[in-house]
Length: 567
Image: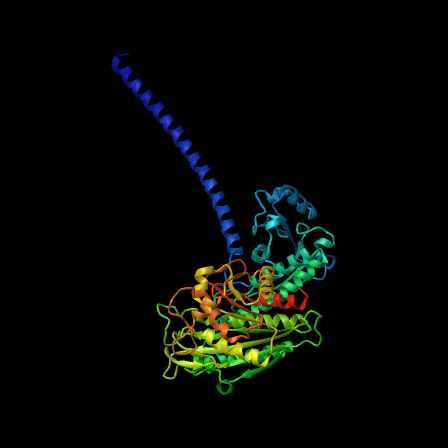
C-alpha cells in the first residue's frame, strides 16, 4: 500500500469519526432541545396557571356573586350542593396547623406543599377546599381578615361555581370556650365586611358597549361556631351599608346634585324608618346660612341641607341622655370656584361628597341594626361652580351663628357648608356629641397619606372613644393638635376669621381650626378629615374597582354602638 493510499484512508477515517461525533452532538443537542422544550412547556403551563389564578384573584371589575348571605349552621350547609371549605391558617406553627386543618376535611398535606400561611395567601387545593393564610396570630387585625376575605371571594370565582356555600373553618382563630366568643364574632364580622365590599362595583352606568361580566349566582357563608356565624351576618350587613355609601359616592355629578341628595335622603328614610326633612335654599337664606348660600349660589342646582334622624323607641341606660349628631360634607362637585382647580385637578371631585356619603352609610347601618341611641345626621349639599353670581375671593359673608368670614379662597368651600350645618345643629338640636367628617384638606393627605384619617378633638374622653372606634372598625384615625394658636392663625384683619390662610403652615390643621368657631365650647366635638382615604386610584383586595372606599361608615357606626354601650 502506497503512502498516498494510507493518507487517504486515514483522512476518510478521520472524516467518518468527525461525522459520527457530529451526529452524536446533533443527537445530544436535539435531546437537550426536546428536554428544554418540555421544561419550557411545563413552565409555561405553570405560568399560565399562575396567570389564570392571578386573573381570578385580582381586582378586575367584579362582583362575582349577585348575593352573599350568612348561613344558618354547618349541619344544614353540609348538605348543600357546591360546598367549599375555607380553612384559615396562621403560620405560627404552620406544619401542625396545616395538618390539623387538612385532616378535618380529609385532605393530605401534600396538596398544600409550598403554602406558607402568609397574610392574604390563597391556595385552591381542589373544587371543595381553599386555604387562606392569616399570617402571625398576634398580628391579625381588621385589615388582615378583610383583605383575606376579599381575596377569598375572588378565588371562589376560579372554581366557576355559580351556587357556592363556603363553610368557614375558624378553629385557628380562637379557643373553643367563652373566652374566644368575642374574638370569633369579631373575626366573623370582618370576614363578612371584606367579602361584601370586595364583591361590589359600580353597576348603574353600564351601556350597550360594556364588556364587564355581570354578577351571577349566590354565595352563602357559614361557620362551625355560632359566634362566627353571627359575626358574619353583622359584617355582611355593615358591608352593605359601606357599599351603599360607595354607590352614592360614585354617582356622577350630572346625576348627583344637591336636589338628588335630598331625594336620596327621603328614599333612605322610607326604607329604614328614619325621619327626614330638608332645609331648602330659600330657607337657608332666611336662616342666615351665609356659608352654604355663598358656596352654592353660583350653580343652577341650588344647595340644601338634608336632615335624617334615628330616634329609637327605647335606648340603653348608657345612651339615655345621649344625642349624637353627624355632619358630613356633601359637595356634589367642586370646581374650586373662582380659585379654580387647574392641571386636571378637577378630576375626581365627585368624591368631594364622601364625608356626606359616609354619614349616609352610617345612618343606613344604625337604622338597619336598630341601635338603641338617638342619632341625627346633617348633610349640607352644594355644588361649587363658576358663574356671574358665584362667590369670590375677598367676599365677606355672615354665617348662621353670626361669625363673619373673609373669603380668601373659594376652593376652601367645604368648611363653609359644614360650619353652617354645625352651628345650626348646636342651636336647634342640642347634641351631646358632634362629629363632622369631610374630605377637607390636601394637607392631611401630605401628612398622613392614604393610611388613616386625621382627627382633631376638643374633648379627651370623646377623642379616646373615636380612636377606639377607629381601631376596632379598621377606619383608623390619627390625632392632630387643636390649640389656640391654630385658631388665631385663622383670624382676619377685615372680618372675624378667614376661610383659608395663604400660609401653608399647619395646612392640615386649618380646617379644624376654622370649624372650631362653629361648635359650642363645651360640646364634645370631633373633626375627621378623610381626604386621603375616601377613594383609591387603583383596585385593592377589598375594592374591586378604583373609586370610593366607604371610609367612615364603620367608624361612625362603631362610635354610635360604643356610646350606646352595645359595642
